[in-house]
Amino acid sequence: MSAATTTRLDAGERTVSRRWSGDWGRPPVPVRADVDVLIPTVGRIAELAVTLAGLCGQDDPPFSVILSDQSEDGAALEAPAVQAMVRVLRAQGREVRLFRHERRGLAEHRQFLLDQAQAPYCLFLDDDVWLEPGSIRRMADALTELGCGFVGSAVQGLSFLDDRRPHQRTSFEAWEGRVEPERIRIDQPSIERASLHSAANLVHVAEEVPVERDGWLAYKIAWLGGCVLYRRQALVDCGGFDFWRLLPPIHSGEDVAAEWRVMERFGGAGILPSGAVHLEAPTTVPDRRVEARDVIF
Image (tube, rainbow, N blue to C red):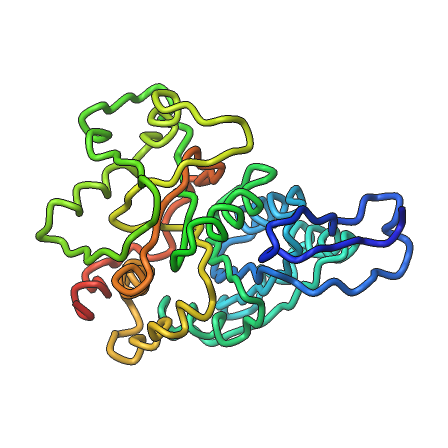
């Protein structure tokens, strides 16, 4: 079998879209993407290459990659390791689009990427996150079954694997049945769920709440960072990141603000276990005096 065969994600059927190395020399057969993977990057090369390598290990649903670099010289896009992973993705049959974009802040960058997306689902993936093989499929299965606005795999720092923090895991609560819309604010008890995503807490929750291999369990969140799969239209209907105009160029928390708006209308959830690994590189946004959520809400 040399050509990719596909079925639709919405039908709940399995697909085969990643071409194996034996087919790399043949012209790719165009496959419509069900998911656009949106990656904003600035000032990172090694981490970005690892992130792309994680995507090379994903199978289905069919996806494309849209990568936007805000580095002044576009160095990340020209780096050999990044170029090599882009070539692998394209050989596998994935469309990869590369952009250089003026730096106007995190929220504006995410809005720019969202404006490029066309697939029914979009995965916002940070440039310092490695995904376990099968992660996109698990998130897509969860989002299709749950019917909410987004699901995500919270990033985990495996340097904390031996750092057990049971007091930060007490807020874990699985969703029973339908994921309902929620209103999250910093002065509400639900904000305590944020500690679930610190260190390697979610790895330890997965140890205590076993899930069948390749399966998933939806749980309640305060927000998710680094790896969030949206129903694109749900995010657009809630305004996306259009609030970027209200923010100074240096800010953080733009993903929280967007997620809270979607959660209020459509609901959102995390999935357990998470196959998303944080590379634990230094932040590219050390100045966090302006939190987007505080401005918007």
